[in-house]
Image (cartoon, rainbow, N blue to C red; front, side, top):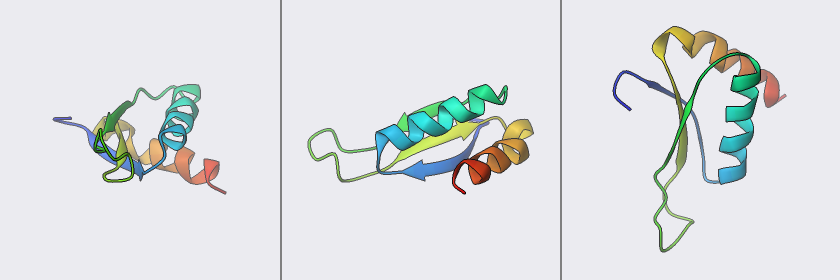
Length: 67
């Protein structure tokens, strides 16, 4: 995830996918990185990354989606 900024973190995969879809609707490309343990899905997090130039708008989209 070099040169990208983490803007969202969750333990639930569906939440990360939902936020990625919201960002894509807004024209922002993003990447999901699953850091959860493969044996025990409860340890670790799933993170969503965007380019630094998209960070401000991406955070606004995520904030609106969580309201």
